[in-house]
Amino acid sequence: MRHTNQKLICLLLFLSTPLPYWATAANPDGYYAKADGKKKEALKAAMHDVIAPHKKISYGNLWISYEEVDYLSKTNAQGQHQVMDYYSDEIHYFTGTGSAVSGMNKEHVAPQSWWGGGTGIAVGSDLFQVIPSESNANSAKGNYPLGKVTGAVSYPSKGTSNSRMKTGKDANGDMVFEPCDEYKGDFARIFFYVATCYPDVNWQDRGDVNVSFRREDYPTLKADILPMLLQWSKNDPVCEWEITRNERVFKEQGNRNPFVDFPNLAEYIWGDSVDYAFSVDGTSSGSGGGGGEQIPEFATLVNCTMMSGLAPFFARTYEGCEGEVWTSDAKYGAKATANSLPRKEADEYLMVNIDLTHAETATLTFEHATGFNKTEPVKDTYFQVLVSKDYDGVPEDATWKMLDANFPPLPSGTSSYTSFVSSGEISLNGYSGDNITLAFRFRSNSSAAYCWEVKNVKVTAYTVPDGLPFMAETNTEQGNCQTYDLTGRLVPWNTKGIVIRNGKKILQR
Image 1: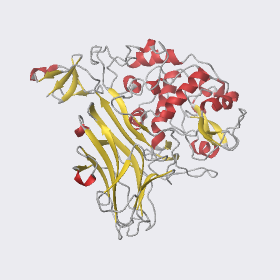
Image 2 (image 1 turned 90 degrees about the vertical axis):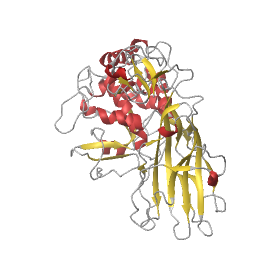
Image 3 (image 1 turned 90 degrees about the horizontal axis):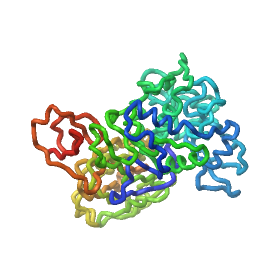
Image 4 (image 1 turned 180 degrees about the vertical axis):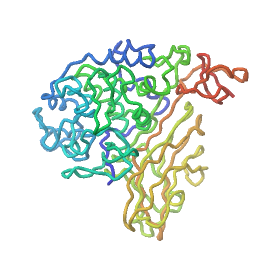
């Protein structure tokens, strides 16, 4: 079954106006001041002191708050708003009265059975971690921890599979709950919030399920889940819905999720930047943090579901071929098929222009599925992922390089589709400093008329702020100095490119 996307905005952010990595929404003046300059445990403790004081909403009144927090723009004939649901693609609408929505539950992201105190304590009714869920999906999730399902997918007798979640055994044979790829980062940032806001909750040791939290100030999250959560947060950056919900919860509850406001914050607390001093305004005073200079910005350049239109992508047909074949489908994203063409002959590019002139690193990810190609591998033949530095309006005149993307396995039947698979992280680092055109090229003929579906296309980058001073550095005697890359990882001293050494950014040749 294919995923259905409810994310609200198809967004293209150019580097001329990048989204800073350190702030995805306007933060109240001074709100995070306590956390400025802190590292690791001290940073987590400071963030706890910032977000822990908040209005406790009673569990019984959560539906009243949900109507202010979890509504989507879509309405029914009665003017009632659709309920946002991370767990299921079934559509439900608020009542408009603050009462429970039929067929839905109040679901604890960190399960209620994991702590002592039930819903009577703050974590039991916190709007950031208690969210609306379709009831069968809630039952299927149960009290399982987050994880990667590697075995057979299982559901309770009343539940049915859906595109937004699955449950089953992980590689260790333990039962886990796995959200769909587009919400994995959302769930990771909720777990980071819970670990920061509620380290002193009476987290239980259970024999039947692996509880992800311990009652301790640091790290609170168990070591066996942290790498996965950090990776999920990187793979699925903060989206427009999270930013919107953060603002709405702030109005209702009086606190914020700092891991939405600062998408890299988790790396400073648990990950690869724990040796850096965190700075609210995007500078760093730590030994590896640049001596008060700006550190690189994290920008989302393309973030498009393809489900409500193809823009900012545009289609161009190879000269002499029929078209157009790329259309937007409300369930499956950008869809290319030539079945309606008289000779089923097509060669059409779905393209977007991207400015990487200030990018140091850039990554492309997307999801896609194929159909009707039971015996025919389509990768790099009929379906291609391409990049060009010299496209000027005519596809056949451009120089294209093929990018290596993961492709789905062959469909099970002649007229069947595959499930959507992730492309994997595709590096665009070789195009840093260039304006590029990214293209999905679809080819078809009378004997090979297959189908390609592409959705959730993202291009993210670390960019260098304008005017950032650099030093050319070729001195090989620096080998005894610690050297960091721009994400704060310790790297070999002779790593080429922009590195951080002795508190300064250096362009090392």
